[in-house]
Length: 143
Image (cartoon, rainbow, N blue to C red; front, side, top):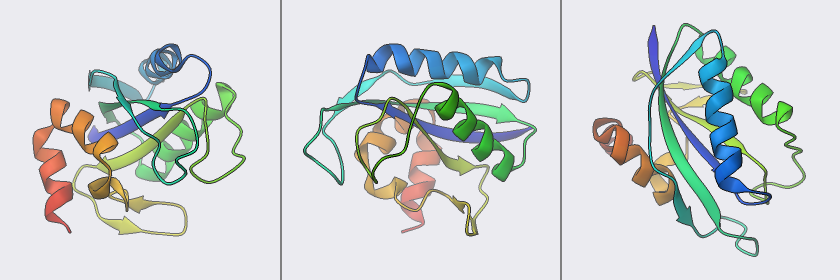
């Protein structure tokens, strides 16, 4: 089983409930075991700032899925929860980003690992530090 770290966020609807639902769907996935999850933090929007604050959290999981398949599992959960992608960095019901997968570094058309902006985003790093400080430090050490 591989270890991976996810960042989850939402800022429309009922963000805490949507984060809980997403965590439940991750835990129910036959190829994913949730190891730990952070508390939910409130943050200002990043990138496109004229929108409601976000509720953000991190999760550490174990999976037998390769990285691309894990990405697709996360995208499937987003879609099943009703996420429609209207604009980059815009409001969302749920966002599940694959931040790191083991210590794998890759850059393809579909997936970059570790996540290319994770080291710049406190809303990713703060919850990640709570559950896996060594992973947060590794992300920072790459830049």
